[in-house]
Length: 100
Image 1 (cartoon, helix red, strand yellow):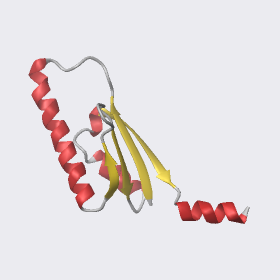
Image 2 (tube, helix red, strand yellow; image 1 turned 120 degrees about the vertical axis):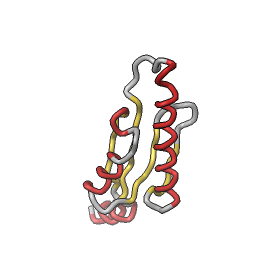
Image 3 (cartoon, helix red, strand yellow; image 1 turned 45 degrees about the vertical axis):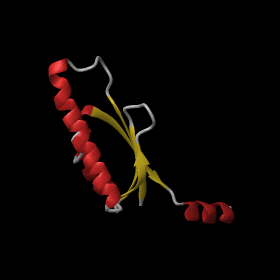
């Protein structure tokens, strides 16, 4: 099953200079994981909208539990808001529409 995953940071003021390096390390670690999941085919497509702090990607997962575990394994999980939307396939939607 495919899931559309969108995430955004919670907002607020920028981190103090002494915390910026740690935040950038967490972001880099998350991007490395996402890149690896894409290379492995777990993430079908995705990226960062130009000039934004959000991440958008499509996950191919066998269940809601699987996509939850994947998202919660990301280093930025606690620092971001997440929205996960199960996607109906085009083929199923077409079949259903034709049956109506």
